[in-house]
Image: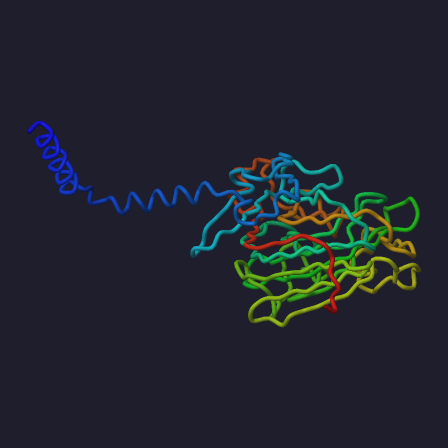
Length: 352
């Protein structure tokens, strides 16, 4: 009888629990799911993070990125059931020894020479670029979302992929720059040749500090997805850019043999864009041959608070609020880039 009584009491307790079920239990379940989503790390979304280190816009440097994130710089956002890795950085923060611009950007730990090569891909959308700057300065309102960086010699950059959008425009431009590997020991004459993908190249600037050029008809809007593939194979760099609603664009550039070894070979774009800062160097004949390089990916903010009169190519005169990151984020003085897919690996034969 005692056993029967206990069984009956257990049954009544279960019935009571069912009758008193919290009407908000479904909501609680949804919140739990959202909280679980909030615990995701960038390495859960793009699982190649063990091949990189990162420098954040506040100067934080981290070499182990598995199960790592940092609020306001490197984290995960979910939009329409799609997870994105967010790279966010202010116009002014703490940056690397070789640059005056802030970044929240991955740096590949494996290095390679162009003859060996490598491949980097990314599918992304730029959510925000700085809304302050000098329209006459080529780097204003722009961010680099992928690059190849040299790790010896002058430590120049054979590739930087940019997104740039002027204030008030709906569409921005995607373009890529090749920086010459300057001949000799003096690197002060270096320059970037810019090539348009969608929209304009870097040389299209405003007539005055607050006067903008025409909006590009075939540009890319903020929040619009595009993809790139950087494939270095046997010393040749093959670039492919794709985006729904836009023509696929491909480019080829040798990293072993220079086109710019004489003053006469310097393109007209360089004479007009870099004339004000006197950069008219020439490149060594073998370009980046035999030089150690590595990939970078994320948000390398190209805007800064430097005086435009000192450098009309790179000193953008953007608002920095004295380096106060919270104020910069609150007032549009930052850049934010979302990646949903990316891979890194060996270079491949483009004919296969």
